[in-house]
Image (cartoon, rainbow, N blue to C red; front, side, top):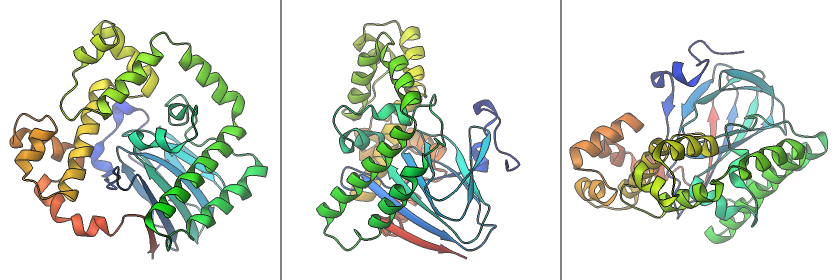
Length: 311
């Protein structure tokens, strides 16, 4: 089931058909959990955002639409989305409940066990709705139920619990698709320059200013054209889109978490001036930095675990 207007491929994607969202994921709040309960079958939604998303159907049946395809998921089954990848859902049964874990690419590598190749699950080469073996479905649902119990814990304990739960769910997904993920990992790690690409990703994450394609390619000792092709193959997005998305995302966090003037935030994150920053920000979020900041109180209410009852 594909909703009218859903893109057959990225070239046909119309950003006006999707809601651009920011969940205010930050180093302070690296994991946002959203538990949505729906009783209206018309509560369909389509969005796009910078952060990674891991979702679980807890109750009912939901068709997830992604990369031009639709797949109906039942309780215990999951979906994943990468950076700026448009996606959505349509309810097949009511009531339905879905739990979404929102994580920034920067924080995900710190959440999962050491040695875990976190890129592969969210890679465009991976299945966006990876199958889950029956023996793991009840364990995933059990993990989701545990999330609901951490809301009353102190911040550090709750964060630790949420990180542990996400790691468990992802590991159940990996165990269900071990041959496929091993194949993807082998293909990825056999790419000459894979380690250099990972280093460039970390460079972007640790730099406030602009990292140009030329600088990134030089860091990898590659030509610009070769680096650009390799970066997109490994991460699924162009380097320019990846780097700009990171700076815009981090600047949005600065808008919400500080009282710094917009001009200073623009400069801090490598934009030429406030006018250039505002135009770029509006292209990403559909609103100006000043309007976005005004919404901060409402957005901050959504930190941690958010439960909504859509009627």
